[in-house]
Image (tube, rainbow, N blue to C red; front, side):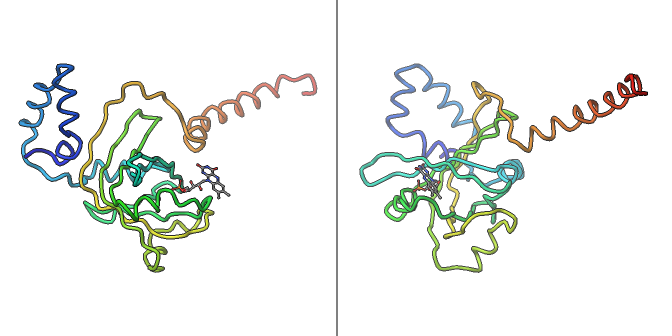
Length: 203
Ligand SMILES: Cc1cc2nc3c(=O)[nH]c(=O)nc-3n(C[C@H](O)[C@H](O)[C@H](O)COP(=O)(O)O)c2cc1C
């Protein structure tokens, strides 16, 4: 047995592809090195999840097609309840209920969390539960200052996770991150404008 992510992600098809393209041996050694372990969220993952203001959620429909939807909210809106449980509030959207509908038929879920600024990404596999009738939990998982119509809670039992390397991630900054970067520059501009004003003809 190996890390749970490989049990889920390394299907026969994936292993065959690794054999075909020459990486099977490398990954077999990787599996042996990793040893037996449950994929429990550690401080590293918990901190990363808490800093996200968005993620992509993959589900599977009954036609066997994958589906992805983007989820956004206040920073940290995807909450870690314990080392294997995540939860977030599902906001009212366009009423197509594609993700929720898929989950009601197949609870398998995949979360893809991006940190474009630091070029990091985390993949999470799990099982999701759609909870319509727990106002207390809805309140607990809500961010009071974030403007959204709250519909329901989605709880995710984490089965596995894995980090990806930073390759080919374009660096992008959120509005809040840009504001942070701009702050010292704006301060410097203010200082220089004040200095410049001393030399203007009206002085
Ligand atoms: C009025 C309204 C219209 C929307 N229209 C779209 C749309 O056309 N396409 C889309 O991907 N999301 C749209 N959204 C956002 C989605 O409804 C939202 O992300 C929701 O979570 C979709 O979930 P689903 O894709 O699982 O059905 C809209 C949201 C609102 C409130």
